[in-house]
Length: 125
Image (tube, rainbow, N blue to C red; front, side):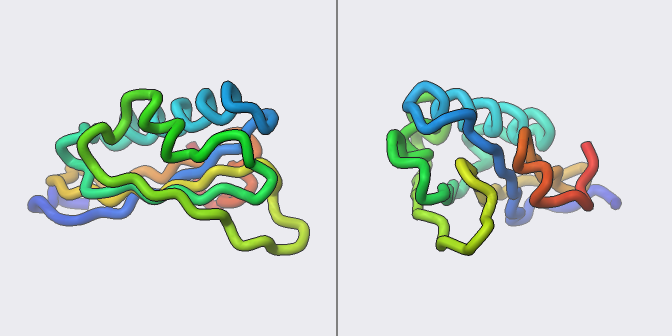
């Protein structure tokens, strides 16, 4: 892909949480955001907004609050919703979509970590 001019991109990711505790949610959200920011070479100045969803078995911490606690998106809007329940869905999962505006030298990298890698077997890291 040739270098693009500054434009809007949506970068997706997901991670599973080891258990429903505030510390585990905080750790998983930070791990996911660290990877997404690094892989896509983004900074807070590039972020327009961040949208999280989490499965209904995560009740100890809101993923947006975990992101803010980790120092992410201190100046940009965050929003978190509960994932719609679907039978046999992957449990303890946090998903994210980060809208960024920047010039990208390569196609955005989507990041699926831990058990969430099963959600997108077509994406190899």
